[in-house]
Amino acid sequence: MRSDILIIGAGGAGMRAAIAACEKGADVIIVTKSLIGKAHTVMAEGGIAASIADVDKADNWETHFSDTIVEGVYIGDWRMAELLAKEAPERVYELERYGAIFDRTDEGKIMQRAFGGHTYKRLCHIGDKTGLELIRTLEDKVLHSKAKIYDEIYITKLFIKDGRFAGALGIEMRSGDFIFFNAKAIIISTGGCGRVYKITSNSWESTGDGLALAYNAGARLKDMEMIQFHPTGMVWPPGVRGLLVTESVRGEGGILLNTNHERFMLRYSPEKRELDARDVVARSIYYEIKAGRGTAHGAVYLDISHKGADFIKRKLPGMYSQFMEFAGVDITKEPMEVAPTVHYQMGGIEVDPYTTSTCVSGVFASGEVASGLHGANRLGGNSLADILVFGKIAGDNAFEFVNGKEFTEVLSNEIESEIERVKGYIREGGRNPYNLMDELTTVMEDYVGIMRVGDDMRAAIKRIDDLKIRAREMGVRGTTKYNHGLLGCLEVENMLIVCEAIAKSALMREESRGGHTRSDFPKRRREWKRNIICYNNGGVMDFVTEPVPDLPDNLARLVKPEVYEDE
Image (cartoon, rainbow, N blue to C red; front, side, top):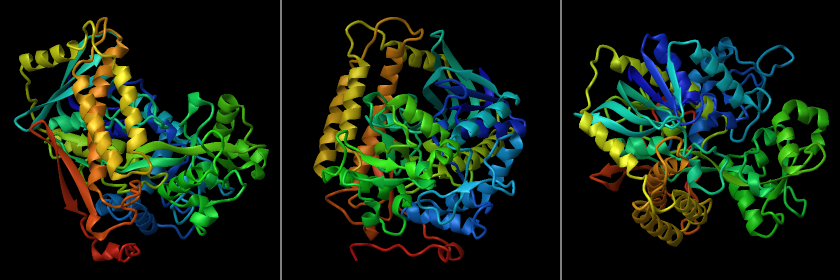
């Protein structure tokens, strides 16, 4: 198949990129590992961060910019933060023009709610189903565009010829057929890597495929140690452990309690309390559980019952039904049990802030898979703003890149070689990929989790190296047609790259900052105001660190200076 632009991923970032590119006249193909409309974007329930000031009149892009830099603990890319803060309002109004339905104020304006780390009530929302409404709206727009959509296709390799993207090979899971996509440019919008951890809010697709594809193609990965543990995931029953309990519960007045019925956030964060940044709240819950003040299921309580049944069912209908159906808990009458769950990756593919291009010509990235905006900790609501703002930027700039360019051909023997590599996993007596996946996710959960220490991470790296050797012996029976075992082999390959990058970056960063907390280096350190970059150096993962660019004077005045605890 041939197109100007190939987009991998049909979540919010991929679809917004497709809309932008199609509007400029590009020929676009979208492929997705899952189904169109089935993306992790739907798990961003709380809202879209945008300083439209419909509720708090004092809000503006400058405050949103400052909040993003400060809560990213000063290692985010200020250029991306500035773009997001300035462009998010127009992207929200644009989404409304596309047909999105928002909750309304009494005056008929877009309703906005409070969220952790935001100075003002800034999150534009639709109950607690904002991500779902965003996907529904963008999907409708894409289906009425000229973009061609192919679902249940798993991309196995990107082909680079003379330093430029030339195409990608995918396997259509329904038929087992291989498809080569010849394109002038690619936009990677595959989402995050939460499934490399045992307990996560992420859906099954989030195995870091886009990260590994980009890394193998020569792109650089940045800030991979920065993993966001959302403070509140379900813990019981075991089948739903990790499922997201939206921050909207706290934004609408929910409070956290330990088993002594103490509102413990008054101790950890007396001013912001439950609405402090996610890393702060997640660590506070972790400390309470470790101190023996957690429930029998290893959780704390989140209680919003004091707000009344009518309020809860109107503002949080998804959470009400989620707990009733999955846990038999009526949140209008009793508290929820919650504990931290892996939710988001702040790091990812390094991109140019103004174009989303990577260091590989013709390769772009947008959404969660791309790094830079969020630094060491993402503000709630900035993820949906991110995919709208940088999805559009990716689509616009990919079009500018391909305009007037010719296709680059890939030799058929190179394509056949990749097909044979993938087919090589179909054999008798191979190792079960899902056993290796289970072992890998356990290693990450136990050794590179919410609280990290050098010896544990060194142990994790050793285990990952051992798993890389054993992964060469993976194999499954059957054919290429709808073979989930074969998919598992390919996913394990990618997960091992991602886990190595996370663990080694985390071991390098000898401080605690945002989503990265080390018990052996508990303080933030000036010398680590740097980004860690990893890249493929002839088949070996190599690393460099680079200083975070200083803010220009006109933006520096907006941000309170960083305070270092070791000085």
